[in-house]
Image 1 (cartoon, rainbow, N blue to C red):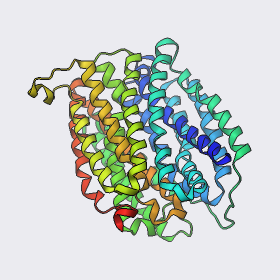
Image 2 (image 1 turned 180 degrees about the vertical axis):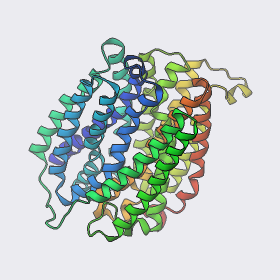
Image 3 (image 1 turned 45 degrees about the vertical axis):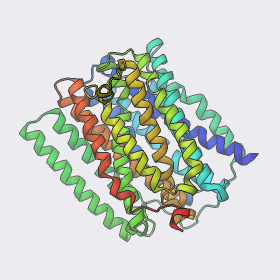
Image 4 (image 1 turned 30 degrees about the vertical axis):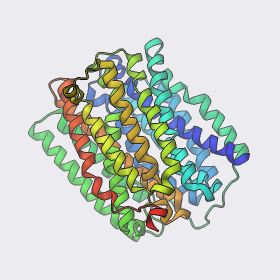
Length: 456
């Protein structure tokens, strides 16, 4: 019974993380109005959260294996809850961005640490429970936007952060009581230099994108070029440092293996294509479709339901199908549905079917959710079987790459919307561009592990 209660607790932490990843997208238009911020600055409330997660997640996976899962989990829960309170009290957009950064640091360990706990609890049925664990995230996609849309429309955006407090306190209590401390490594050290170099590289890349979007002038282009050059230099320094340090954040031996390298590149593409669009669906609903804030939150429910149902089915079929078939099917579904979000494309009218705006949008985003539910469980498990004893580190690395892609995707969509003459044109470019970009990642699927049964 204890391990099932711990599975629920681990899932609840991921649910809280998922709620906060999606609920802010509903409040995004409110930030621009209440704080008088342009879309580029307000977009950093989404981007900085992903930057923090991207920078800290690989370190969090190592910490959970070195210092013990219980200790790392409790510290992360406290930081996430405290920064959520600070976000709700933020007096301006700048302070909100800073507090969102700390919130991302707190939430970065939830995925690798929880995945490590689940893997420890169910070693004989790891694929099934990791797949079920992955299906929890879209539940946050239902609760977060729907609850957020109602809270923002009825009360204030600040309460979307306050809802984390009771969940956080409940989780702290359950982990203290139920989780036994795993054995910590006496030789473990923290690679702060590597973490700093990696964070600087990601931040430099995204700041360069923001500068170009802000002003297309020679000084800004020069600054962007300097930042991108700094990003390149920092990446080189990071990789060299990881080669030399005794306890690196990223296991370079894993990265040299073709299946791991392919899987990480695949997750960058997947994060950019999916989360770059996912975070802006509520804004698309209010700015292009002219829906209310409440309705813009509710539109996230159909894709989340489709995601959950598809993930549940695929999780039980992974041993039979392997990993490649679901990833290919999921990629095609995601690419097609993201492109079809453009209101200018109506292929069903060619056969005489005419949907209303609401029905058409709900149908397309629901299929997008199904594509996510097909793809994620397979890609989540694809490399764990090669070194199941390193599940937290591998999950952290996978989450980092997916978050890097998500951060880039959010930045790219923000830049496109800022430079476009109107939201309709901007979203059209974003939908078609990111949808086609997902197809480009398909060759990587064939370099990744095929799955246990398929490999036999």
